[in-house]
Amino acid sequence: MLRLDTAPPMPLSDALADWRSLLPGIAIWALALYVPLSLQLGRLEEGLASGPLAAGGSEVVLVLGSLILALVAGLAVDLLLGWTLGPGWASSLGVLAALWGPFLALASRKDS
Image (cartoon, rainbow, N blue to C red):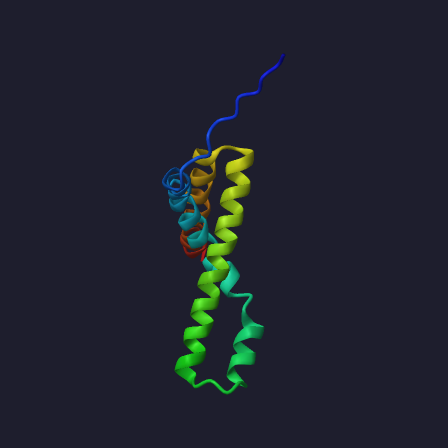
């Protein structure tokens, strides 16, 4: 008779430790994606300007919205690349993506 032994369920502390190892990659991808995604929030900014919130409140909502959008996109990109390439490669590509913007800015400044 074939007996399948199943492993005991992973304790919650181990599951949280697994997620903690992804946090640097998620943060790096969020940093790399923050500016490009923030530029696309023009409609939200227009809606907040015509809404009932004060100027300070609408700025807080806009900044928090762009941060949450960048973190969610960073999480999605890091999980997708971590699944396809491995977690180390996903974080390394995040560093390259985060440094690519300043590199292009410096390169274009040198040309002009």
